Every structure is written in structure tokens, then in C-alpha cells.
Length: 245
Image (cartoon, rainbow, N blue to C red; front, side):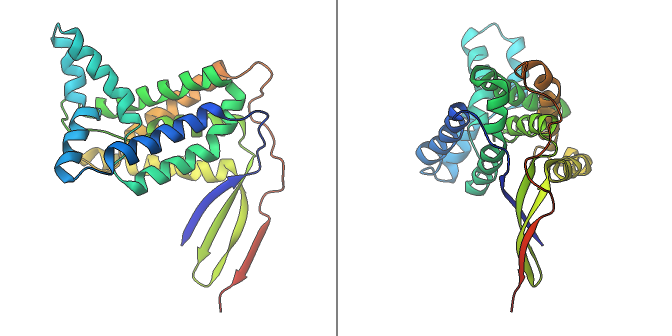
């Protein structure tokens, strides 16, 4: 079965400049700096610009400002680097879907800070599982998990249009955000124990760390007039479908 969210019914009042800036930087870094690299170049790139827990925590045993600045900078650079094209496209789809509304609700400056903080706490959450790990972590999904959390708190009944393909049936369906995103959260929780046993793979703890940061930060950073748990703008479960012949 294919289940693919691609737009929502949630209007915005201003152009999401910061969100598009984040999307643009992620795409630019991948196309300009990562895509031209061969396998060895990719390894070197990740070693330099990925977030490596052992190196990050190791900085505190050194008295070198340059090393410390580099390691803190890797928190940011890792958030704008990706392991491949599908990794990039999947993350950017989620950022495109949910980031514009959160920027609208927080304001541009606070949204910028929110995104960076969620990405930071996501990296720390993943690294605490194995602080001595030397495997680089890359990807925007930790920060985007915070965006998902903020969207879920503010717009749980907003409707997400999803494309589905189930055997001979194909169509689109409006589902409430609490179902679409709640399913995503459940998948992360179920996948966490297995991911903790693996040296590499998907950083599930980072997703949950970023999500937790988003839950905690959203109520404090939202604009005063923005309410939590707002209603949707269209009816849920409306669909357009057809049977393949």
C-alpha cells in the first residue's frame, strides 16, 4: 500500500520566507556540495560536516576554541546535509507541508530559532544513546520532527490530503492531522527499540528528541493570539477515488 501526504487545507497569512530559506539551503548544499562527490568524497564530507557524538563530547576535554567552534558548527551543518536524494526529498516534503503554518504561528525570528533548537536537541537525544559513537549523523529530520510536533499541537484537526494506492484502488483522501502525524509518531515509538540496537540507519531517537523539543517550545514561542488545538477548515474523510482496470 502507498500512503503519501502531499498538501493540507491550512492557509497562511504571510509568505513563509524562513521555511523556503531552509528548503533552499538544504537543496543547495546537496546539489552543490554533496551530489558531485564520489563515495570517498562523501565519507570525507560526512566526517567533516556530520554530527559525530564522540567528537562533540570530546571537545569538552580539550582547551581549543577552534575545535569547540567546529564541533558546535557541525550541529548546524549536519542539519543541512543528507544521506541521499530520497532522504532529502522526503524531509523537504514534510518541511514544505507543515513548516509554513508553523512559521505563521510563531513569527519568522522565533520560527528560525525554533527550528535550530529542535535540530540541536534531536542531535543530543540521538547521541546520548551512544556518546562514544563515531558514526556521523546527517539530515533535517530531527528539526522537522519538532515542526511536526508544533503543527500537531496547533492544528490537530487540519486536514492533510493523502494519495493512496491499495491493490486496484487509487485515489486521494482528506485525513485529520492527528491521524496522519499521530501514525508517524507511533511508528517512531515502535521503531525506537530496534534502532537503538543498530550502529547506523535511521536516527529514531533524534526524531523523538526533536519532537519532544517541539512539544515543549511551541506553547511558549507561538504568537499570543494563536490558539492551541485549532479546528480544521474542511471536512475530514472526503475522498476522490477510482478502481484501476
